[in-house]
Amino acid sequence: MTGPNPATVLVTGATDGLGRGLAQDLARRGLTVLLHGRDDERGKAALEEIRQATGNDALGWYRADLAELAQVRDLADRVAADHPRLDVLVNNAGIGYDVPGGGVRQESADGHELRFAVNFLAGHLLAHRLLGPLRAAGASSAQGPARIVMVSSAGQAALDFDDLMLRRDYSGWRAYCQSKLAQILDAFDLADELDPAVVTATALHPATYMPTKIVPSPISTIAEGVEATARLAVDPELAGVTGRYYNGLQEAEPEPQALDPLARRRLRSIADELTRP
Image (tube, rainbow, N blue to C red; front, side, top):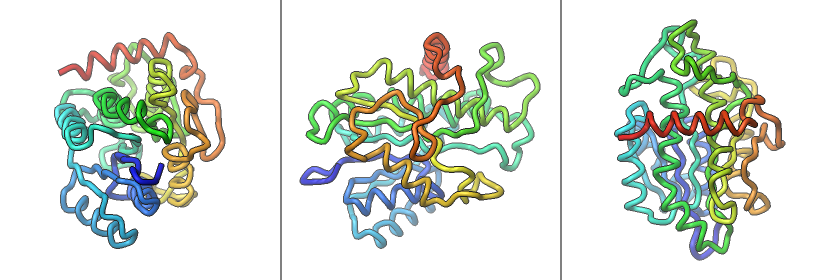
């Protein structure tokens, strides 16, 4: 996705951890990289660090708190206004299971269970709100279709449609795993909807317990996660591949609910309703 008109990629949650590593990797490849985060100071520091490390000035910064859907809409609208063609959206930002307050049920600014809101609803809204720029890029690019990549997890739990907001028997781990499976259902639903010659959608577990702020006991490295995620985002060999889930570099089977088209449609209907202005 490089050349005379390099691809433009939006990476959410790009001020640290996997997102920051991915943004730097893509910048080093010569792409136009848009970084998102919720803190201007950290975002501008990440931008400058990546610029210095890669020599790439084609960088942009966008601040938004994904726990508030109005800010997600505004983020999408600002990106679309600045970049009518968007080649790749990497929905990476998220909240882990073991963070301060993780054992207590928390809600977003809109009154939704916090991990469901940030890890799933925000990415769902952002992807659908940016379909115009993604389609514009995918329909006219010699490099193949535009791509949506959901950074999910191997930690998955089936959604209880009678209690999506986990008002009963709440746990941070359950909330996290449910939100991560929701991301995979969302990727597969987008793949069902979109012409794979124009826009594709995939999901992955990038690596196991990388050293990020949401992981207490790391196992894998950030580099491993970056390699797996960048592969789905820009590898020419995966152009046109859609509706797949990967564990690292290998295609894998998600929790069975992700393969149920009725569950995908039900979640889509709920998500559309919850994210409607």
